[in-house]
Image 1 (tube, rainbow, N blue to C red):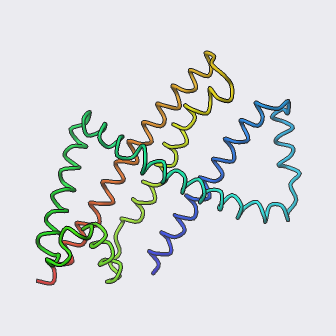
Image 2: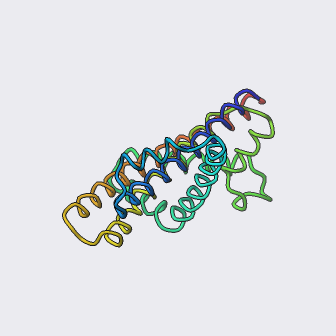
Length: 215
């Protein structure tokens, strides 16, 4: 129970930070588009009342949820599988990790799943829900949270490649910013992929161990 509480706190903090980060990025673009100075902008925040702060904090959290949902959709449709294919081509470690996960997946499907559900239910979710039902604590949720966090950062960074020329046109500093955004997006996607592997490894290993201990 304590472990689940800690994981929930971690999820809340990650979501809040995503919302806060997105708000800061929008604020930076707002400063560029208007004649307001940084000192004037900071002064606006310093003059925020307590009642406004009480409203602002949950609003940032909701914003984080919205950004996370959009990032998940973009990652699932466009980025996720493509990046994993690129990583598997350029990295021997990623190829080995993917092969390892695929081996565990096939092993669970063959050894622990009945014929009625074999090849019909994703073995990952089969293992995950079993562990949750038995109240077996795993680090999977921590890895999943970090995977989602870096996925959002990657999506936001890569989105700037499209946003920057639309907002500011083409110039040297815009091109440099786009290159930096691409580099950061690639790094964040790489980190996200690593936690994707660790989450799967945690689920499959703990499931197999729990089953083998009963024999």
